[in-house]
Length: 247
Image (cartoon, rainbow, N blue to C red; front, side):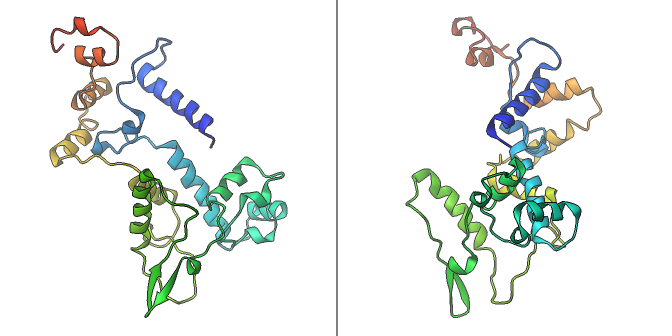
């Protein structure tokens, strides 16, 4: 999914949420990234389209790694070659001519890299030591993400047995789109730490049985995103001189 398409779809979602079917422009009181958070963190639990798109593409990528004789797999083999099935590294540059947008997006999941684990470290007295190779030095803002990557891969215990494909986030090594979405959302998002009382309140307001408009008002009130004079002044709706009270 291109950035342009993603922005347009999010715009439609945001306008529907805040503007309903009215042609009048409404204020978006809560950031879309916060809306996509789980309900226990104060969001609405709406799926992040970019993460969901990656999860769905990864499902196709996983199927290409598995054995099978489905019709779609035979079509892919005819169009892109026998080596795409079971290949751990697909390079989009190899399919630049005549490749569909769907196939290009699948290839980009591999990042265009052909490195394997055995080239990214060494064995020392039966213990695997990572030695990742990078093209350049990191910027300061990139060091946090590098450390996140190292924390993730350091939790995996490598052995010298023959490799086989498995999906660790799932209980039975079966790839599930939901399991990947939860994993990516947990890894990439900056989660908000809520107290037990706050988490209970954010979850309960949607199960209380009151009209949805009342639940939405309480939700905005808990987030301090209601049209008070201070909030309206902050968003430039009214002038600072007009702010003389709380409401």
